[in-house]
Image 1 (cartoon, one colour):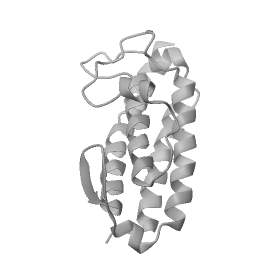
Image 2 (spheres, helix red, strand yellow):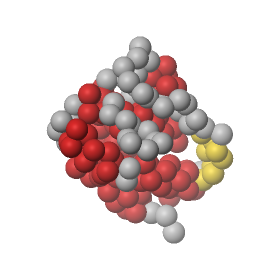
Image 3 (cartoon, one colour):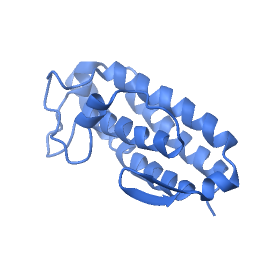
Image 4 (cartoon, helix red, strand yellow):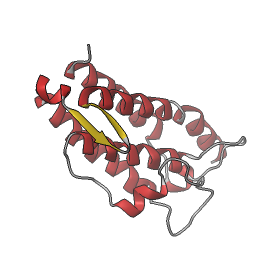
Length: 158
C-alpha cells in the first residue's frame, strides 16, 4: 500500500540525489554534452522540473516555473546542446526544483487517505492520486540517477 510516509521518503531520496550530484555545478557545467547519445544536466534537470510541475498539479498546487520554460523540457523535446534563448539558467531550474519540493512535502504531510485515493487526471494520466504521485516519483528517480556520471564528466572537463 502506498503511504504518505513512503511517498515522502522516496521524494526525499530523489532530492538527496539532486543535492549531492548538482552541488557546486555551474550553468556551463550543466550544458556539457555527454560523449554518447544522451542529454546534458540542463535538459535532465529541466525535464525533472517539468514533471515536478505535473506532480504539483496532482496535489492541486500552483506551478513554480512558467509554462514556456517547462515546455522546453517536456517529453520528446530536442536535447539542449548549448546556449539558446529557450534554455533555462541552471540556477533557475535548481531553485524551481527546491521550491516545488518544499511545497510537495507540505502537501504530502497533510494528505488524507481520501485524498490519496481520489482519482485525478494530470498530463494525460488518470489514476488515484497516490499512484500517480508514485509514477511521477519513479520517473524522477530514473532521471536523477543520470546525474552521477554527468557530474563526473562536467568536473573532469573543468
